[in-house]
Image (tube, rainbow, N blue to C red):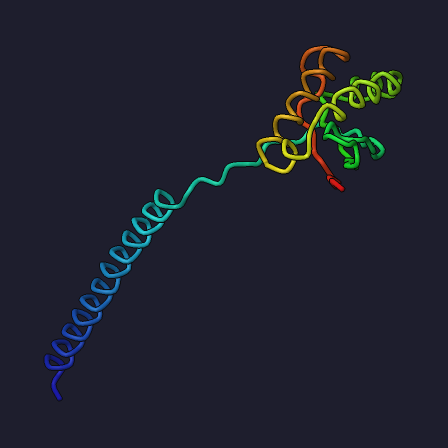
Amino acid sequence: MSKKNIIIIAAVGVLVLALVGGGFFMMWKKLSTIDKIKEEVTAAAAPKVEQPPSIGPLFALESFIVNLADPGGKRYLRVTMNLELRDGKVNEAITQRLPQVRDCILMVLPTRKVDDLQSIEGKNALREELITKLNQLLGAGSVTKIYFTEFVIQ
């Protein structure tokens, strides 16, 4: 083979390698652009996960057992609850005024009838009334929520 043929074959080989390399480069750029678009679409379509609201300090109360206001007085309620408080200062106030807190709750519970407490609406109404009464005693916004941990009607 002549020197001229070797130079032509080498030039064609370099040209082919340059074209193949350029083709791979263009494909790589296109695929990376497609991946970016997929990530953007996925991020936009994904539902935003909201953080659950933080829970305040809890104060656990002992069980209450009271007669209900039904005719004959043969039905009673046993309930245990936790009070969610605004902050730790309220926890101290409840500890100091625990007899008053228990009295406040004991004045509300016996006024209910079985029919009132068997529905979710009745339990929520009881919860709201207790929160209102306790906040009157401890200061507005002191008790933010009440969680019933035991609720037995017999």
